[in-house]
Image 1 (cartoon, rainbow, N blue to C red):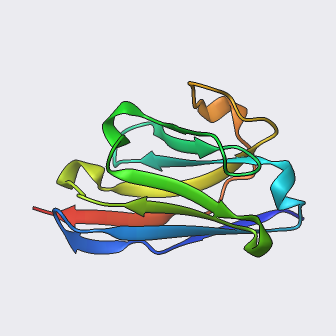
Image 2: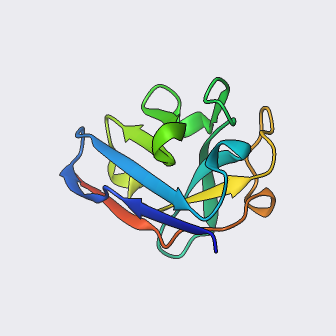
Image 3: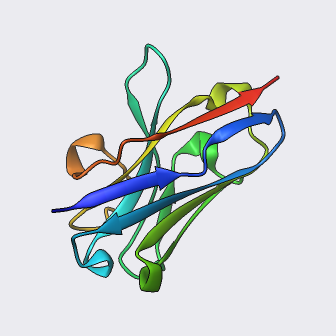
Length: 125
């Protein structure tokens, strides 16, 4: 059975940083592209970033470029999201998920599967 477990969320001041982790089990981790999504209260799920199987290709939504960095450690079955210069509008539940392929230039919720339970991120202004 596939499990994805996110961690690392919390409350920080605006301008601060957090690093999220997503640990996977029950699947050959390096066979899958991975992605981060977020969902703010009252809004739909939004794609944040994605990364290919080997960690060589990445994609970022426009509002995250230059502030967030996605990476993965296949030896540890773990996906990361380094978030710097956090803003109050980054407040959301953050989820990881996997995709069978890496899709250049796009990140769509419908392409991803096996979602984790989420970790809450809040940046106070």
